[in-house]
Length: 469
Image (tube, rainbow, N blue to C red; front, side):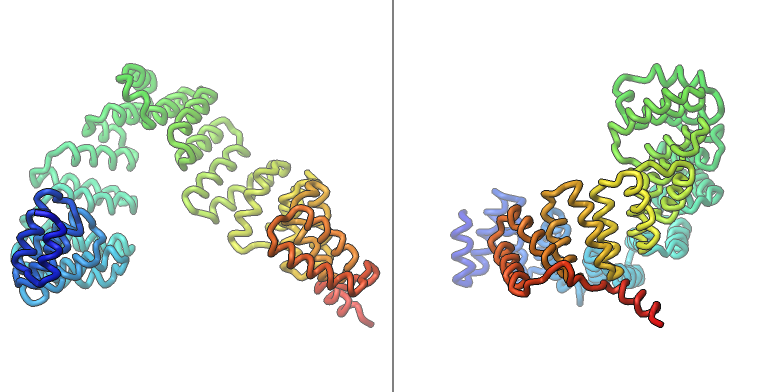
């Protein structure tokens, strides 16, 4: 049976024949979403709602974000099965980012559930929605209610323990996982979870009792000061393991423990090649430099660690301390100035761009930043001076040429504006831009402006006002 024939039956409203024809087409192309959609639609017309639900569920298996399928399933179950109705509505709201609506839907689904397993699975989804919305206490309440039931799964214990772990509530995480073991879940996941929590809490000996993970065993041994024994295990690991990021972090930890800091830093670089721009790279470097007594590089790496962790305040704090030790690192000064700018501290940022210009008078980027800062203050005269210096560094920078010409216009330095616009025209090729600049030139030349006509910028005017007798 061909798709064309199925479509012909549907167009002529021979729905039974169209339905059968589409089913035959689906047997040949089971992942065709268009055919599944037509079958769902025809099943609704033929009042075969169970079959329609089947086809719309098949669509969701292949396209989780399919809004039409959710809408149809919500419609199918609106009057027949309130549990499924709220589940599908909750799933749709969740996928659309309407988490508060989804939470309400799943709460209603729990109330409408007919079987304990339905309530348990829905409560678990609800707990995770609370986690996503930052409502940790409600998530914990939901998991604890789950653990009082009979339909238990190890994942429930693991997720609750993970909440406690993220809050550094280690005793509660340990209690939860031991409770899982008492309930019969003496599984690899539970035991490895316990090992991870014990290690995080500083009890490496307990962690060693529970883990079967060779790399975690080595980490525990390093924490316990069993450095040489750990190295022997590390060196005898299978070759395939030696290419993993965890292997390099443990090797770096070994060299750190053995006080071989140069080797530790080399190993961290190897890790960085595998996992570039990881916060862990900067954290490990910072710890090594801490131990070496290199405060400057320690602060530098802690700052970059905090940037990657999106903790801008802490990053700024570390960089400010680093600058107190060494104030001639232009890369650091740029990073600090940018952080301050992003945080709205433009006045403070300008101080560091000034430092850069003192160190490198032809630093084009710093000069342009200072010009931008002065423009924001209405100090167009100083803006023009910074832009002119930036042009000395790169006289073919079209963007700077145009900005300087505009600045000269603002301070009524017409002849200078004309000269700069002409240089700008030599670099641009866009006909619209050329026409616009040519019109400006014609107006400026018609006015016959001269540099003697320069006027004060806003800052100059304000200063002049306060200096009046």
